[in-house]
Structures are given as C-alpha cells and as structure tokens.
Length: 79
Image (cartoon, rainbow, N blue to C red; front, side, top):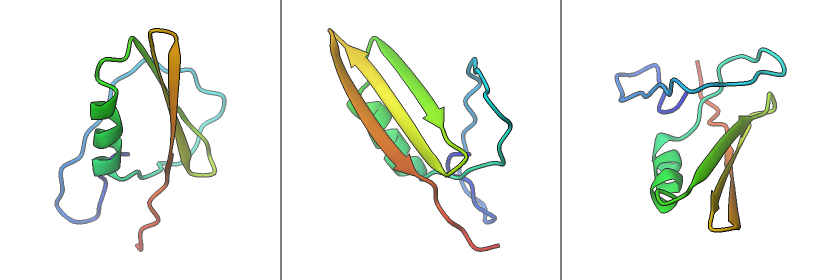
C-alpha cells in the first residue's frame, strides 16, 4: 500500500502483473519517496518492484545497459 493511512489521505493502487512467491500482509510505504524514485527514473526502459515480507521494497530500473536499484523501507504506523 502506498500512501496508506487511517486518516483521509491520497492513496494509489497499481494494477500490475505480478508473480507471487507467498501471500503477505499489506505493507505500507511512503508515497512521496516512491514518487521521487519513479520521477528520477521516468526515462527507464524497464522497471521491477519486489516486496519482501520483512517490509522492504526493492525497486530496480534499467536504461541503456545501466541499472539503478533503490530500497524503500516499510512505514510502521500505530493502530
């Protein structure tokens, strides 16, 4: 979940094809950081998002033979 909060907020859902190794609970990530990563790589030819059950997203982009990899940690929120 990107931009999730118990308060009113802007949320986005990305309907992407996925391959799932195991079902995991919803994990929250900071939307601004995710947006910044996407904007910095908007020219990428290929991108991949992997989410671990430990709460880390690995986001990888490829452009002209170069690879950029980012790690985005889970946001821990209070219930």
